[in-house]
Amino acid sequence: MSLYRLIIRPVLILFDAEKIHKFTFSCLIFFQKSALIRKISSLFLTQKHPALERELFGLKFPNPVGLAAGLDKNAEAFDMLGSMGFGFIEIGTLTPKPQEGNPKPRLFRFVNDKAIVNRMGFNNDGVLEAVKRLKRKKTNIIIGGNIGKNKVTPNQLASDDYINCFEALYPYVDYFVVNVSSPNTPNLRALQDKEPLKDLLNKLMGLNKIKKKTKAILLKIAPDVNETQLDDIIDIVTETQIAGIVATNTTISRDGLSYSDEEIEAVGAGGLSGNPLKQKSTEVIRYIHKKSNGKIPIIGVGGIMTVEDALEKLDAGASLVQIYTGFIYGGPGLIKNINKALIKRTNHKS
Image (tube, rainbow, N blue to C red; front, side, top):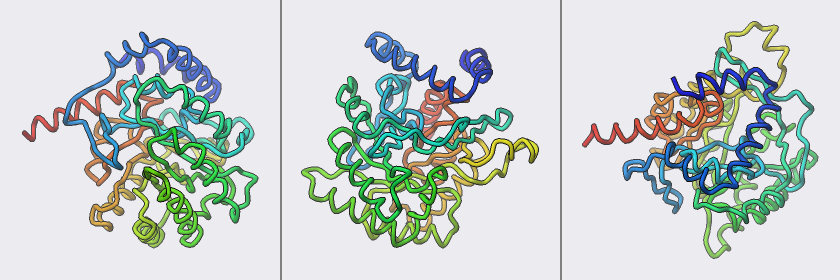
Protein backbone atom coordinates (compact mmCIF):
# COMPACT_ATOMS: atom_id res chain seq x y z
CA MET A 1 0.00 0.00 0.00
CA SER A 2 1.32 3.46 -0.91
CA LEU A 3 2.39 6.10 1.61
CA TYR A 4 -0.48 8.28 0.37
CA ARG A 5 -3.18 5.68 1.03
CA LEU A 6 -1.61 4.43 4.26
CA ILE A 7 -0.86 7.74 6.01
CA ILE A 8 -1.80 10.87 4.07
CA ARG A 9 -5.37 10.04 2.99
CA PRO A 10 -6.56 8.84 6.44
CA VAL A 11 -5.41 12.18 7.88
CA LEU A 12 -6.96 14.27 5.10
CA ILE A 13 -10.40 12.69 5.45
CA LEU A 14 -10.57 13.74 9.10
CA PHE A 15 -11.16 17.32 7.97
CA ASP A 16 -13.94 19.15 6.10
CA ALA A 17 -13.68 18.20 2.42
CA GLU A 18 -13.55 21.72 0.97
CA LYS A 19 -11.21 23.09 3.65
CA ILE A 20 -8.71 20.28 3.15
CA HIS A 21 -8.96 20.72 -0.62
CA LYS A 22 -8.02 24.38 -0.16
CA PHE A 23 -5.13 23.47 2.14
CA THR A 24 -3.66 20.80 -0.15
CA PHE A 25 -4.00 23.14 -3.11
CA SER A 26 -2.12 25.85 -1.21
CA CYS A 27 0.68 23.30 -0.69
CA LEU A 28 0.73 22.44 -4.41
CA ILE A 29 0.91 26.14 -5.32
CA PHE A 30 3.79 26.62 -2.86
CA PHE A 31 5.74 23.58 -4.15
CA GLN A 32 5.12 24.65 -7.75
CA LYS A 33 7.39 27.67 -7.26
CA SER A 34 10.41 25.37 -7.00
CA ALA A 35 11.78 23.93 -10.24
CA LEU A 36 13.77 21.45 -8.11
CA ILE A 37 10.66 20.09 -6.37
CA ARG A 38 8.87 19.77 -9.72
CA LYS A 39 11.88 17.92 -11.14
CA ILE A 40 12.07 15.51 -8.18
CA SER A 41 8.32 14.90 -8.35
CA SER A 42 8.55 14.17 -12.07
CA LEU A 43 11.52 11.85 -11.52
CA PHE A 44 9.59 9.67 -9.07
CA LEU A 45 6.10 9.81 -10.58
CA THR A 46 6.34 10.25 -14.35
CA GLN A 47 6.44 7.27 -16.66
CA LYS A 48 7.98 7.83 -20.10
CA HIS A 49 7.66 5.27 -22.87
CA PRO A 50 6.79 5.41 -26.59
CA ALA A 51 3.86 3.04 -25.88
CA LEU A 52 2.20 5.73 -23.76
CA GLU A 53 2.25 8.47 -26.38
CA ARG A 54 -1.01 9.40 -28.09
CA GLU A 55 -1.53 11.73 -31.05
CA LEU A 56 -4.95 13.33 -30.96
CA PHE A 57 -6.46 16.71 -31.86
CA GLY A 58 -3.17 17.69 -33.48
CA LEU A 59 -1.46 17.30 -30.10
CA LYS A 60 1.11 14.78 -28.87
CA PHE A 61 0.13 13.55 -25.41
CA PRO A 62 3.07 12.02 -23.47
CA ASN A 63 0.61 9.59 -21.85
CA PRO A 64 -3.17 9.12 -21.95
CA VAL A 65 -3.93 9.88 -18.28
CA GLY A 66 -5.19 13.40 -17.62
CA LEU A 67 -6.59 15.37 -14.71
CA ALA A 68 -10.31 16.07 -15.09
CA ALA A 69 -11.73 19.56 -14.74
CA GLY A 70 -12.83 20.68 -11.30
CA LEU A 71 -9.65 20.20 -9.31
CA ASP A 72 -7.52 23.02 -10.72
CA LYS A 73 -10.50 25.27 -11.42
CA ASN A 74 -8.52 28.50 -11.46
CA ALA A 75 -5.35 27.37 -13.25
CA GLU A 76 -3.29 27.70 -10.08
CA ALA A 77 -1.24 24.49 -9.87
CA PHE A 78 -1.07 22.99 -13.38
CA ASP A 79 2.75 22.98 -13.52
CA MET A 80 3.02 21.08 -10.22
CA LEU A 81 0.21 18.69 -11.16
CA GLY A 82 1.91 18.10 -14.50
CA SER A 83 5.04 16.97 -12.63
CA MET A 84 2.98 14.30 -10.85
CA GLY A 85 2.73 12.12 -13.93
CA PHE A 86 -0.33 13.45 -15.75
CA GLY A 87 -0.23 13.55 -19.56
CA PHE A 88 -2.49 16.62 -19.61
CA ILE A 89 -4.38 18.91 -17.23
CA GLU A 90 -7.88 20.31 -17.71
CA ILE A 91 -8.53 23.60 -15.92
CA GLY A 92 -11.92 25.07 -15.06
CA THR A 93 -14.83 25.10 -15.33
CA LEU A 94 -14.24 28.81 -15.97
CA THR A 95 -16.90 31.49 -16.45
CA PRO A 96 -16.55 35.06 -17.78
CA LYS A 97 -17.18 36.71 -14.40
CA PRO A 98 -15.92 35.47 -11.02
CA GLN A 99 -18.57 33.72 -8.96
CA GLU A 100 -18.77 32.31 -5.44
CA GLY A 101 -20.67 29.19 -6.42
CA ASN A 102 -23.31 27.56 -4.25
CA PRO A 103 -23.59 28.00 -0.44
CA LYS A 104 -21.35 25.86 1.78
CA PRO A 105 -21.16 23.03 2.71
CA ARG A 106 -21.10 21.81 -0.89
CA LEU A 107 -18.49 19.04 -1.01
CA PHE A 108 -19.11 15.68 0.68
CA ARG A 109 -17.34 12.33 0.89
CA PHE A 110 -18.89 8.87 0.89
CA VAL A 111 -15.65 7.22 1.98
CA ASN A 112 -16.89 3.61 2.13
CA ASP A 113 -17.91 3.78 -1.53
CA LYS A 114 -14.92 5.89 -2.65
CA ALA A 115 -17.31 8.56 -3.85
CA ILE A 116 -17.75 12.32 -3.64
CA VAL A 117 -20.84 14.50 -4.03
CA ASN A 118 -20.29 18.12 -4.99
CA ARG A 119 -22.58 21.03 -5.70
CA MET A 120 -19.84 23.62 -6.10
CA GLY A 121 -21.68 25.56 -8.80
CA PHE A 122 -18.81 26.71 -11.03
CA ASN A 123 -17.07 28.62 -8.22
CA ASN A 124 -14.08 30.30 -9.88
CA ASP A 125 -12.09 33.53 -10.06
CA GLY A 126 -13.24 34.28 -13.60
CA VAL A 127 -11.53 33.57 -16.90
CA LEU A 128 -9.27 36.65 -16.86
CA GLU A 129 -7.61 35.62 -13.59
CA ALA A 130 -6.94 32.18 -15.07
CA VAL A 131 -5.39 33.82 -18.14
CA LYS A 132 -2.96 35.76 -15.91
CA ARG A 133 -1.79 32.48 -14.37
CA LEU A 134 -1.56 30.66 -17.70
CA LYS A 135 0.74 33.42 -18.95
CA ARG A 136 3.20 32.36 -16.22
CA LYS A 137 3.27 28.70 -17.32
CA LYS A 138 6.73 27.19 -16.76
CA THR A 139 6.36 23.75 -18.34
CA ASN A 140 5.10 22.22 -21.57
CA ILE A 141 2.18 20.32 -19.98
CA ILE A 142 -0.85 20.15 -22.30
CA ILE A 143 -3.70 22.28 -20.95
CA GLY A 144 -7.40 21.95 -21.69
CA GLY A 145 -9.77 24.82 -20.97
CA ASN A 146 -13.17 23.77 -19.63
CA ILE A 147 -15.69 26.59 -20.15
CA GLY A 148 -19.18 27.32 -18.83
CA LYS A 149 -21.68 30.09 -18.21
CA ASN A 150 -22.29 32.30 -15.20
CA LYS A 151 -25.24 31.35 -13.01
CA VAL A 152 -26.95 34.71 -13.60
CA THR A 153 -26.72 34.43 -17.39
CA PRO A 154 -30.03 33.20 -18.86
CA ASN A 155 -29.81 30.23 -21.22
CA GLN A 156 -30.81 32.33 -24.24
CA LEU A 157 -27.63 34.38 -23.72
CA ALA A 158 -25.43 31.42 -22.68
CA SER A 159 -23.50 31.37 -25.97
CA ASP A 160 -22.14 34.86 -25.17
CA ASP A 161 -20.49 33.49 -22.01
CA TYR A 162 -18.95 30.52 -23.81
CA ILE A 163 -17.67 32.78 -26.60
CA ASN A 164 -16.19 35.18 -24.05
CA CYS A 165 -14.27 32.35 -22.36
CA PHE A 166 -13.21 30.85 -25.69
CA GLU A 167 -11.72 34.12 -26.92
CA ALA A 168 -9.95 34.89 -23.63
CA LEU A 169 -8.40 31.42 -23.27
CA TYR A 170 -7.66 30.74 -26.94
CA PRO A 171 -3.97 31.80 -26.94
CA TYR A 172 -3.19 29.93 -23.71
CA VAL A 173 -4.84 26.49 -23.84
CA ASP A 174 -4.33 23.54 -26.19
CA TYR A 175 -7.94 22.37 -26.44
CA PHE A 176 -11.40 23.36 -25.19
CA VAL A 177 -14.20 21.51 -23.42
CA VAL A 178 -17.73 22.92 -23.52
CA ASN A 179 -19.44 22.06 -20.23
CA VAL A 180 -23.23 21.96 -20.55
CA SER A 181 -23.62 18.95 -18.28
CA SER A 182 -22.89 20.04 -14.71
CA PRO A 183 -25.91 19.36 -12.48
CA ASN A 184 -25.00 22.26 -10.17
CA THR A 185 -25.94 25.30 -12.27
CA PRO A 186 -29.73 25.76 -12.62
CA ASN A 187 -31.06 24.83 -16.10
CA LEU A 188 -27.54 24.30 -17.50
CA ARG A 189 -28.32 20.77 -18.67
CA ALA A 190 -31.15 22.15 -20.84
CA LEU A 191 -28.33 23.35 -23.13
CA GLN A 192 -27.75 19.67 -23.99
CA ASP A 193 -31.05 19.71 -25.91
CA LYS A 194 -30.60 19.40 -29.65
CA GLU A 195 -31.26 22.93 -30.93
CA PRO A 196 -29.53 25.00 -28.18
CA LEU A 197 -26.51 22.66 -28.29
CA LYS A 198 -26.21 22.79 -32.07
CA ASP A 199 -26.47 26.59 -32.01
CA LEU A 200 -23.79 26.93 -29.31
CA LEU A 201 -21.32 24.56 -30.96
CA ASN A 202 -21.81 26.08 -34.41
CA LYS A 203 -21.05 29.55 -33.01
CA LEU A 204 -17.86 28.32 -31.33
CA MET A 205 -16.77 26.39 -34.42
CA GLY A 206 -17.41 29.47 -36.56
CA LEU A 207 -14.99 31.45 -34.39
CA ASN A 208 -12.53 28.55 -34.32
CA LYS A 209 -12.38 28.28 -38.10
CA ILE A 210 -11.33 31.90 -38.59
CA LYS A 211 -8.33 31.54 -36.27
CA LYS A 212 -4.86 31.07 -37.80
CA LYS A 213 -4.77 27.68 -36.11
CA THR A 214 -7.92 25.87 -35.04
CA LYS A 215 -8.01 24.20 -31.64
CA ALA A 216 -9.98 21.11 -30.71
CA ILE A 217 -13.39 21.76 -29.17
CA LEU A 218 -14.92 18.87 -27.21
CA LEU A 219 -18.30 18.50 -25.57
CA LYS A 220 -18.63 17.23 -21.99
CA ILE A 221 -21.83 15.27 -21.53
CA ALA A 222 -23.83 13.95 -18.58
CA PRO A 223 -24.04 10.24 -17.76
CA ASP A 224 -27.78 10.64 -17.19
CA VAL A 225 -28.78 10.99 -20.86
CA ASN A 226 -30.85 8.28 -22.53
CA GLU A 227 -30.02 6.56 -25.83
CA THR A 228 -32.22 8.93 -27.88
CA GLN A 229 -30.39 11.92 -26.40
CA LEU A 230 -27.05 10.20 -27.03
CA ASP A 231 -28.03 9.62 -30.67
CA ASP A 232 -28.84 13.35 -30.95
CA ILE A 233 -25.47 14.24 -29.39
CA ILE A 234 -23.62 11.96 -31.83
CA ASP A 235 -25.48 13.60 -34.75
CA ILE A 236 -24.65 17.08 -33.45
CA VAL A 237 -20.96 16.27 -32.95
CA THR A 238 -20.80 14.92 -36.51
CA GLU A 239 -22.75 17.84 -37.98
CA THR A 240 -20.86 20.63 -36.18
CA GLN A 241 -17.51 18.87 -36.75
CA ILE A 242 -16.28 19.43 -33.21
CA ALA A 243 -13.30 17.27 -32.24
CA GLY A 244 -14.84 14.85 -29.75
CA ILE A 245 -16.68 14.10 -26.52
CA VAL A 246 -15.71 14.02 -22.84
CA ALA A 247 -17.80 11.25 -21.27
CA THR A 248 -18.92 11.81 -18.59
CA ASN A 249 -19.65 14.46 -16.00
CA THR A 250 -20.99 13.63 -12.52
CA THR A 251 -24.38 11.95 -12.08
CA ILE A 252 -27.51 13.07 -10.23
CA SER A 253 -28.23 9.38 -9.48
CA ARG A 254 -27.42 7.93 -6.07
CA ASP A 255 -27.33 4.32 -7.28
CA GLY A 256 -24.43 2.29 -5.95
CA LEU A 257 -24.10 4.06 -2.59
CA SER A 258 -24.10 1.75 0.43
CA TYR A 259 -25.25 4.44 2.87
CA SER A 260 -28.75 4.73 4.36
CA ASP A 261 -31.42 6.85 2.64
CA GLU A 262 -31.26 9.26 5.59
CA GLU A 263 -27.49 9.75 5.23
CA ILE A 264 -27.77 10.28 1.47
CA GLU A 265 -30.68 12.72 1.84
CA ALA A 266 -28.77 14.66 4.51
CA VAL A 267 -26.10 15.45 1.91
CA GLY A 268 -28.70 16.72 -0.56
CA ALA A 269 -28.34 17.68 -4.20
CA GLY A 270 -25.16 17.60 -6.27
CA GLY A 271 -23.17 15.54 -8.73
CA LEU A 272 -21.90 12.13 -7.64
CA SER A 273 -18.43 11.05 -8.75
CA GLY A 274 -16.19 8.11 -7.95
CA ASN A 275 -16.74 4.37 -7.87
CA PRO A 276 -20.57 4.33 -8.18
CA LEU A 277 -20.32 6.28 -11.47
CA LYS A 278 -17.89 3.84 -13.10
CA GLN A 279 -20.29 1.52 -14.90
CA LYS A 280 -22.67 4.22 -16.12
CA SER A 281 -19.79 6.25 -17.57
CA THR A 282 -18.28 3.21 -19.30
CA GLU A 283 -21.65 2.32 -20.85
CA VAL A 284 -21.93 5.82 -22.34
CA ILE A 285 -18.39 5.56 -23.77
CA ARG A 286 -19.08 2.13 -25.25
CA TYR A 287 -22.36 3.30 -26.80
CA ILE A 288 -20.82 6.40 -28.45
CA HIS A 289 -17.83 4.42 -29.72
CA LYS A 290 -20.01 1.69 -31.23
CA LYS A 291 -22.70 3.99 -32.65
CA SER A 292 -20.14 6.31 -34.29
CA ASN A 293 -18.08 3.37 -35.60
CA GLY A 294 -15.14 4.67 -33.58
CA LYS A 295 -15.09 7.94 -35.52
CA ILE A 296 -15.66 10.23 -32.53
CA PRO A 297 -12.63 10.59 -30.21
CA ILE A 298 -13.64 10.17 -26.57
CA ILE A 299 -11.97 11.25 -23.33
CA GLY A 300 -13.24 8.77 -20.76
CA VAL A 301 -13.86 10.01 -17.23
CA GLY A 302 -16.01 8.84 -14.34
CA GLY A 303 -15.22 6.33 -11.61
CA ILE A 304 -11.63 5.51 -12.54
CA MET A 305 -10.41 4.36 -9.14
CA THR A 306 -8.04 1.56 -10.16
CA VAL A 307 -5.74 0.54 -13.00
CA GLU A 308 -8.41 -1.92 -14.19
CA ASP A 309 -11.01 0.86 -14.34
CA ALA A 310 -8.78 2.91 -16.64
CA LEU A 311 -8.09 -0.05 -18.92
CA GLU A 312 -11.82 -0.76 -19.06
CA LYS A 313 -12.52 2.79 -20.27
CA LEU A 314 -9.83 2.53 -22.94
CA ASP A 315 -11.12 -0.87 -24.04
CA ALA A 316 -14.65 0.55 -24.25
CA GLY A 317 -13.46 3.10 -26.82
CA ALA A 318 -11.85 6.01 -24.99
CA SER A 319 -8.68 7.41 -26.58
CA LEU A 320 -7.63 9.20 -23.38
CA VAL A 321 -8.83 9.04 -19.77
CA GLN A 322 -9.11 11.53 -16.93
CA ILE A 323 -9.19 11.04 -13.18
CA TYR A 324 -10.41 13.25 -10.34
CA THR A 325 -12.01 11.32 -7.47
CA GLY A 326 -9.56 8.46 -8.08
CA PHE A 327 -6.73 10.96 -7.61
CA ILE A 328 -8.26 12.16 -4.32
CA TYR A 329 -8.63 8.63 -2.95
CA GLY A 330 -5.61 6.99 -4.59
CA GLY A 331 -3.04 9.77 -4.87
CA PRO A 332 -0.52 10.27 -7.68
CA GLY A 333 0.48 6.59 -7.51
CA LEU A 334 -2.68 5.80 -9.49
CA ILE A 335 -1.41 7.73 -12.53
CA LYS A 336 1.94 5.96 -12.40
CA ASN A 337 0.34 2.54 -12.03
CA ILE A 338 -2.05 3.05 -14.96
CA ASN A 339 0.83 4.06 -17.20
CA LYS A 340 2.98 1.14 -16.01
CA ALA A 341 0.12 -1.24 -16.82
CA LEU A 342 -0.20 0.24 -20.31
CA ILE A 343 3.54 -0.24 -20.94
CA LYS A 344 3.33 -3.82 -19.66
CA ARG A 345 0.32 -4.50 -21.86
CA THR A 346 2.18 -3.25 -24.95
CA ASN A 347 5.22 -5.39 -24.10
CA HIS A 348 3.00 -8.46 -23.76
CA LYS A 349 1.41 -7.81 -27.16
CA SER A 350 4.81 -7.46 -28.82
